[in-house]
Length: 317
Image 1 (cartoon, one colour):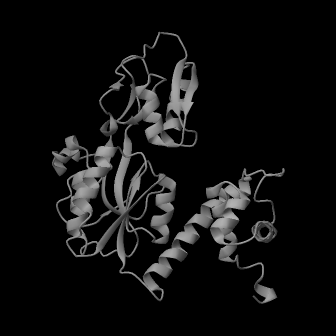
Image 2 (tube, rainbow, N blue to C red):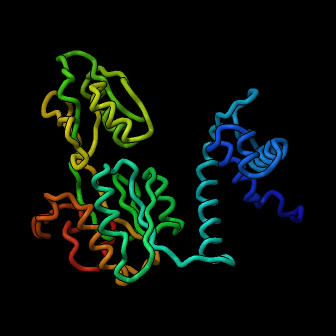
Image 3 (tube, rainbow, N blue to C red):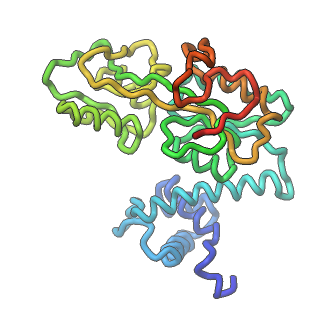
């Protein structure tokens, strides 16, 4: 690379080294995975730090904790690598047919995912369909860069421009029937910091003057749901995900606001061409109570009509 471009381009192998280190948990395993020496991996991370003006990992022998800069770099690195790998897949020497990619939040329960996979795996247009489950902010970023075609998103502050359908979803507090909540006692909270549900729960409890403590935390929603079923604490979640073995808390906790949810398309997607698949996806994801409402029932709400019976786009406001 010419020296005048040295600080304007980040070699993708440096980003791949970072992601591999984080995913494998060590420089040694990353070196094995990438067929490099450990010293080569270390040099790549050092070079990445120089290009970006700071350390990628916290200082300390064998420390695998990313710095704030490292976490930001990791987020972008995953997106850039995904685009790189998709470009090779679809436009490389052994390119595969373009797939229609549906993005889904990782908190969707097993039954909903199963129904989506069964009903949406075969596109009426004959196009291959694939699915990606991830955190909402990552799905939003992938939608913006075009690496996924549509995504089911909730509580997006700045939603994408093209909304296929939008609606409100009820959120509830849940617990195990075995867990007894005593009046005035601290609330055992199950959470994961940074999620919308956790932020809302903490704000509501604090505003209500209710004491609480974190009884369990995990990034994986299924783990949090297991903690609820085990009676470790209470959790906020969408009513659609309530499963046998847990119950909705009707009284004693602050009322939760509804989630604004929707199916959004990337810019440039030919929605008319994919209308049959989008209708099927909307029918699966739309809460049952909403799917039986008519557009006139939603009059006055700042939402698109919940029934999606035509391929027309609803523009998010």
